[in-house]
Length: 205
Image 1 (tube, rainbow, N blue to C red):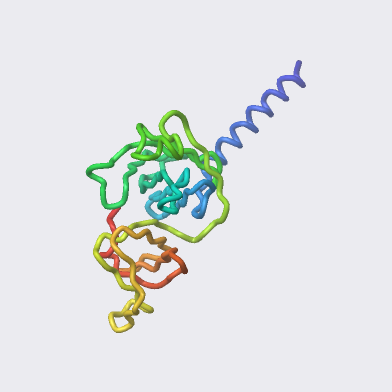
Image 2: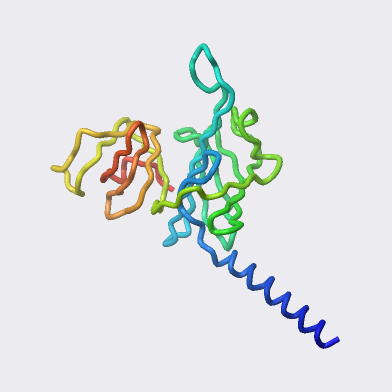
């Protein structure tokens, strides 16, 4: 009898230990499978993410037939975040609330209250939680989008270091530093462009 009680106590302690590890785990920034990119800023518990998925193929247009694209932001509390999701630059017309759960530091699960336009044909986010696993970690602390017509890259946080490279309104940038009125970020186009961009050029969270 005493041995069985010890086994039960040991099992309870083990379960509590595992649960505490999940709660204390910090979501890992990077590229997840099936089109999800996640960034976490631990200094303010801010989670930002970007989902982009496609399905089908239109031969006449030589492009995917259906698309599902939305931006995500929220604040992590323990292992869950209440989030707002919307198409970049279209928050007022496309806002859908939802939740992101942290299952492990490199596994997250998303459920939305309803579907964004086009998503029914790509991935169903509203019927149940959809799980995503990390494929490649990164040092991003935030993901934001450009909210002015054209934003230039700078080599340093100085006006005289302005470069020819730029990003356009609606483009997604992946931030690894925020200093004063500047962000250091990467833009993933045909090539990867990195540098400093003015903080006023991106959306506020």
